[in-house]
Picture 1: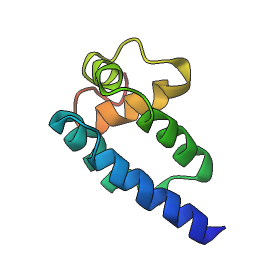
Picture 2 (picture 1 turned 120 degrees about the vertical axis):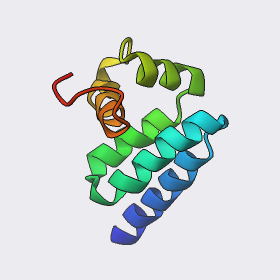
Picture 3 (picture 1 turned 90 degrees about the vertical axis):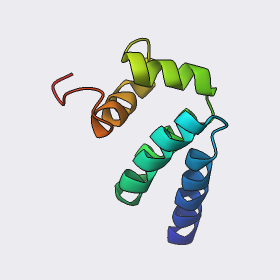
Picture 4 (picture 1 turned 30 degrees about the vertical axis):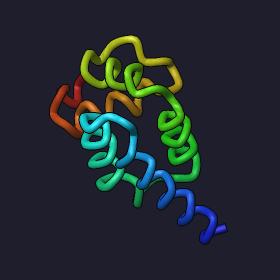
Length: 90
């Protein structure tokens, strides 16, 4: 199980750094570098689902802070706080 979980984290890290647009590579990749090691299996699964979404959608959520699907709201908020696009209170 641990080996599978580690493989999933490595794969998620790669995917986070190779999104397709440079802006999202930086935003999501740096977030992954800082947070992936501490993710629980459920958090990793949700992050993997976010990685499957199109860049324009995720980019809009991250920059505007609005419109994120309910299942990604906390994750997008954490990415925004990490990059100082929002305060922790938001």
